[in-house]
Length: 280
Image (cartoon, rainbow, N blue to C red):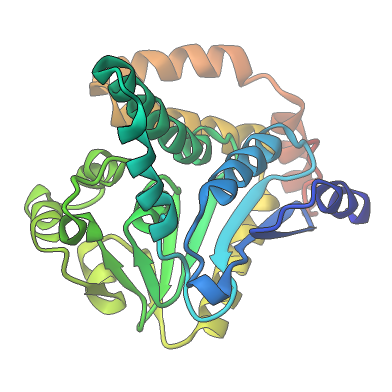
């Protein structure tokens, strides 16, 4: 595991901290002086991190959290202001093409979280606004502190949220609640977020939240990695398809993956009353 940490450190991420231990990768936003808001370099780093962890056979679970006082304040204002640079393109068609490419670039960063075959657990304290909410919407599970607050802040900036909150949250929350958050930009604090299903569980402080989240991550990391990857894939497939389509897909997945070393190891471990040891 130390070698893996060294590999990531050589990549010289300036906006993130990464620690890998016991098959769990702890990824932390690391711009605390900017409320962990993300400039363009940070967006590029985040995509690289999740694409790398996607392929890393030693990592089975990812915990995403923030250094300092906040989880993530989303896209930073400097990056938003840079959108004005597109106005210097004289051709109207090319101007729109460049803006479209920029939005796709940011979307693809968040898509990398969802496409990562490892479960991603978000541990959220204080601010989770704008792009921060887009990010956690792409995670598999969310845990928060009582002082955490979630906001679709784009409405107050004269924008329609375009990085995934409006597309993913309606599969998590009642449509009316998503509409209320999007239309008003109001803050939804930890207890309410947990009540409406945005967060799995709410804690009084960050320490308690991190202990619980890491316990869940370690529990997942002890299970069959092949099965965990399958569960994530099947859950995402069901979100976007009918029940029957999802059942048909499940048959294909199990027919391909059921007869695995993990299956035999799980049976043997149960019979021998010992902890199962799985491949990556």
